[in-house]
Image (cartoon, rainbow, N blue to C red; front, side, top):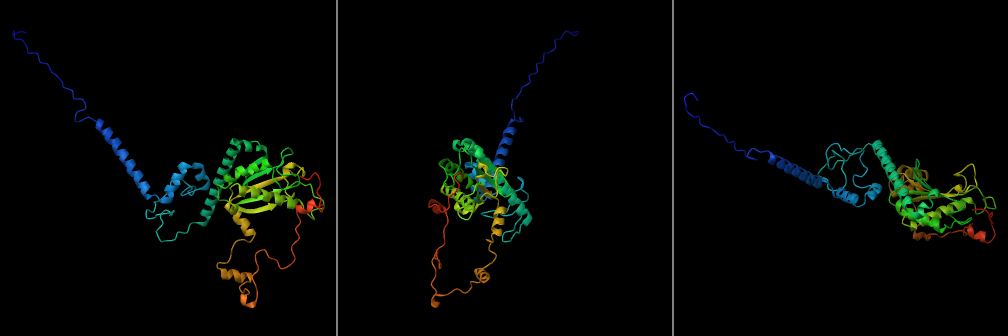
Length: 349
């Protein structure tokens, strides 16, 4: 230096503080904690606002998802959208209340909307039942052996299951209504699956065009088709089907062949099981006049003309069920065939 004096050496040290008071790591942990608490309180709110029926439906879904999808349950298949509009009435304790409904006030839904929704529910349930039956046939060796004789489709009136005959494996004995052992196994296995839906069932029997001797004056194809349909009904009920679900058992004879080009084809010998939609069931009941039109028993008696019944004082005794005042009816059936009264054509299946 010019003046000869030495300059002092200055050393600057910077002290670094890691995760000091102004660090941001704790913010991330706090944000995770707040998010978890939000999710927890949201879950508790949902549980508190759900009814007992809804909670049971959720529990059953996780236990048996397919059963809930087929049978339905609280909130199952009752909404047209997965995004619910409006709010939920938190004052209800059981069942379902329409969004925005006031307790004690009757809500009248749109009839057209209800009908369309019911048809959608029916369609979805029948499609689920068809998938369940197809899967059951695929995994069940007894059913998969008869896959070519099991025809399943969805019609306007419901899910139709047709079991057709084969020359090598007929369902029934020759000209009779006794199911073969392997045919009984088919209906025994599908009965519980059919019982999973609350829908009514119609069973129809069909035959080929081969006639009995007598040209229908005695035991005919109509008797045979009806007896075979009833035999299938009996096996289904014995295998777990609720008998109350059987709406009708019909014998069509040979008037509705599966193969019109060949009236004697074994395909025409079949039994059709139809799982009816709610609309089809209501239509059948209306056609048969089974719907009750009177609002009270008095109106029903007035319409039927039975308002004044004979009393015990007039000397009229009540008739027991099944008693008849006239001669016993003449029964024409397979018993007469054994006596040679109405022999059948030997080739009649």
